[in-house]
Length: 114
Length: 111
Image (tube, rainbow over all chains, first blue to last red):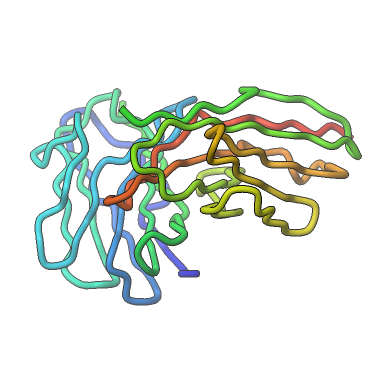
């Protein structure tokens, strides 16, 4: 498995601002993923963060709104830009230690936008 | 479009009961099915299933996959209040590490 930490664990933000969420893993991993879980909903993949290349975004998510960085094999950030109340969600990063195996999740960031 | 459907959406039982949670999937080039337990924010990995008919077991939890009928079940025997959580099922297709999640089953175990 992998030990994953996320910062911040929660935040309350004002409309129109941006928040950057950090995800740190205790070992080098190829694949890192960012998910969103809106209130009462299941997890939806935002993007796959690949080291050394641009993130791959799922339908309905765009780089301008959710820019992602992946500077090395243990770290990634997700920024939620120009936030609105609809962005209030739990944001989760996950990793795969090796391809097509188990995905492990970080502790999540609970974001509230006022 | 890939789809994962879980049932029931919620379930209330008493301690000691046995429960069965269902997950059906339509995933292109299916590769694996994963079960998670979500208590607060972070889903905790339970099982990954790739082959039909082979039961995976961990303590009181077990799971099996039927690739012909496109479903999986998660069994919990002798339930405890600590089993109260949302149980998520996710499917993964070939050529992608992407997981498609169901809406989850909210299990409440009362003392």
